[in-house]
Image 1: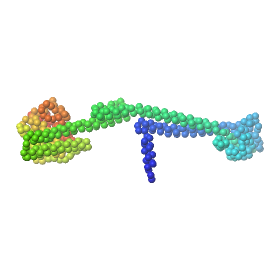
Image 2: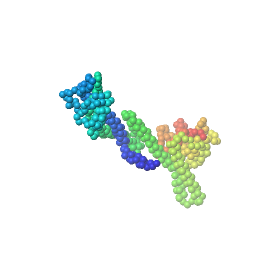
Image 3: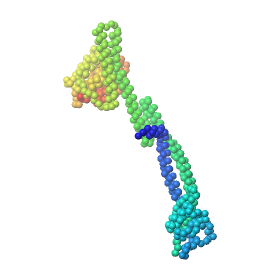
Image 4: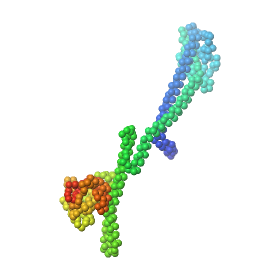
Length: 466
């Protein structure tokens, strides 16, 4: 079966359909009103047609009753009495004695449709009516009324031209159709106007949402005094704007974290290249510089992979645990590559030979690196990293004997972009600690600062046990 014509017709109908919600609602209202008016028009004209027919039947019965007063059925034979208005009464009147025709209209032609219909009605000898076509399309209504008597029975059949009644019915039909057309036009116009006014707040809210989402604005819709539908729409748009703002904030945060984390390996690469180009180097020195650069490049790739994977996992399943890691070897490796000043000594204290945390090695490094870098940067003589197991978790303390965190800055410590002293001569953007906390929380852990520890600073990393 070839369905191409059906598909073409469906596509043509879709092209003809209004594109706007206002047009579609107006079309639905117009279609509904048209269907309702069609039903009402049909019913109205059917009732009026029946009413006009009853009027015609009532007039025929009245005329038959008037003619019956001139028919004498008291004797053995039916006699028609002559009256002063005999000519008026005989117009379109047939009088029968039983089935025998006594009188007929002067203009009646034997065998014509009205004459045959009158004969049939008289033969029934009971009140009855019928409609026939006389001259062309002109309808004629005939009604029979029996005239009872003691010895004889007569029947009076009267006829009436229905053309004036049908003309009235046609006029009513035309008037109702014109009225329907006017009502449909008014319905479409008023519906379009009403829907346009009703949708105006929606259009305004959509424009505002588009403007606010483009700039990440904090403005939101006030749904307190709005209708229930607009309140729900405003709440949905507010939720969407919140998600967009969160995505933008995460994107900015991810960009800042990448720049912060990549700064150290990039600095190592630049320093090695500057050192290597400062004067001719031996093959051993060149190989060592190349190894440092390769290690820094691998670290950069690891940082990028870790942060991007964390961003994806935070969006899809924020509480996912990506793997397990033996904590102690990672701590030793991080301290070996920390690059602490000569005055600072480092130590690892482990509460058990094997401590497994429920995170991947790269993620553990990204969580601990900002804490270790800060500790080595501000320590006077010693940095100690201790790890121990607690029920359901692994706890790692990073302790230094430096000046500690200023009391006025403790509330800002884990906020992105905040630094206690931007002019302290150290490179940094205030993103390391917020990154460490966010990564730890992404796997069900936490990074916290102990304000009671003196001298120096102590940061605690709590991670789920592996």
